[in-house]
Length: 234
Length: 290
Image (cartoon, rainbow over all chains, first blue to last red; front, side):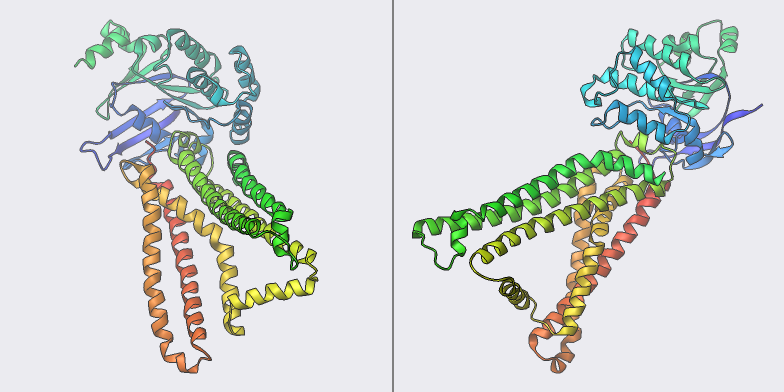
């Protein structure tokens, strides 16, 4: 099988913490799937995502994406939506579009313009004039306008109203490129489980479970949300 | 990709930096023009006929104007450096860093673009500051010419001022000039590297990274100055046996002073280069965005 992501014995130990944030994780993710990275707060989801994106250096172990170690080449093929606003507030949306076009060969500026138009956001506006919610949507549009091999979305629906959740999920599903993999980190499982092909349960920096949604439902006889609540019950 | 990074770095900096440079130039021009008004211009006339009160007022205003301009230039130069430091910190190690560090560029290109753009702005600011001062001197020169002096006399006046300032023999003067030029050449690199290096070093800490970046900046400068003070003292002592061979005591003082200038340049340049190398290592191997 042709794997897109290969993680081997990955560990991240922060010097200030007693226990590792990620503990000897090995995982392979296939192409063309929508995968939920699920776990309670502090389970290590964001740490794992940061290492996949090269903004956190692992203590040990390796990550290969599309056969390459994390670096310039992998960043060309990953579209990353972090759990925060990462754009400079003083910029115009049109400047940011130009920037993405300059740096990412797979960025489709026409697609981005269409999505902005459907949201009725004027590209000549500066980010600082937009509401927090609109900024997040602009950021999502930027990410989903790339024809990437791997989309990594960290908590894309956290802290937004149900209508915005629908918009975000619709945007993700209708805009990711064919054959790409989407890795979505969240703890709001009920909103997202209908779109997932596979799930990874993370607890205390370790992989607790990696299976297809279909298998879990067949084996457990319950929804992913219900199973998650059972597994992670306090 | 380096060119593109520089382009966007420039775009993010030029407005604030241009405003700062504009403020400095505008006040200098205003001061230069004001010197041409009768209130100040009459002060430079040999046959001035001004009441004492008005003359006193004019002199006081001129002195305060000069002090204000000097403080403004210093303030703007520091303001520019602070802005560069804040932008570097935010774009590299705060939320904006999540985009910066996921761009498909090498860490060398990333750091290089920041350093080059920062240095360019430092050079521009220094040039604007120099031009602002030059505008004042040009205005004073124009007043002297209006007062009946010709250009030769004005040039002689400036030469006299310069000679008084640097009462040196040819060898020492050449040494001092070369050191001053080299210092001017490397100063933008040194100051930017020190700021960016201190901010990056603080990223190794767990908490208060922004504040600790400022602490590290002052700490590094303090250590360098402390080491320089020791070297300066050693310089005076080393040259002491040669005092008899020198023409005057002032030559001994000047030689000692320029030796310390050399040491200052070498030490600052060495620390700046080391900080760039360490910063690259931290970004490459120890990056940990919070």
